[in-house]
Length: 385
Ligand code: CA
Image (cartoon, rainbow, N blue to C red):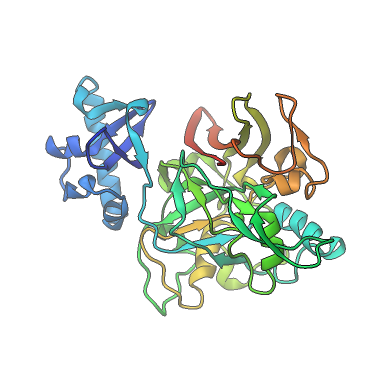
């Protein structure tokens, strides 16, 4: 199921599920005694307490909601139109880690930021590279994103200046939410890793390329990333994605044993789409990609994350890194699409973009379609102000 946190006007946020173009209020179902477990979790303003109940309870919730939906389609007080509710950040996010798991993206960025001949650094094919991000500035879809100021020093400048970024970008990513605490000092094995994943959601890791380029050496991304990241309001449970499983790219060299998965289809075949809509303008689809391109799987990311004994907690968020495909029509950032700003793209309204302009809205969408199964993962949108 797809879980989110919503509110009606003048009422407190609570838990709902997405059901077509409607939201089902699980607190109403709790009042109706639909559940055989402690359903006070559905009155909470975040999903954490529900997630912490564990997969067995999630499964019971699914069965009980579905059987109620089958028999009570006319029980209108539980159904709301998605247009009449306000969606909130679904999870109280403890820690946020951002990976760099698309080989196409890492290669494109390596060529631009470092050395075209040695775009991938020597560690890249051996471990899922990542960094610890900032959880406090993760916002729900629909929240405006303020163009950040930062220190910039580009080629030709004698000294750095503090000014608004001129290279504001989006990053097309998929995130997963941790569904179970692990214990400090005890790594999670690759075979257990998926037990620790509750679900996935679209994620836009907004980036200021000029700030990033000046600051990132030697410790990696900092203020060029931490001003905002946008999360979809709907978290799709991992179990709903079973029909869309697929093999990942061949990993060569073979990963070390602790990262070697026995799962045959560790990746997901989900279509991704990025739309850029200028202020008062026409939307233009600027990229189409797919989660199946990711080199490192979610299980490998989680296993690597805990392999030193670092513990993870319910509500932690781990993002994939920008998901790029093979060519410019499938690149997951403007940095790649515009080749570092050299080749602006033309939008449907005739305007050009190398990077984002004020008033631009970026919308990421994802869906899966396979063997008669279809799933929409909702969207994540944000406007630059
Ligand atoms: Ca990122």
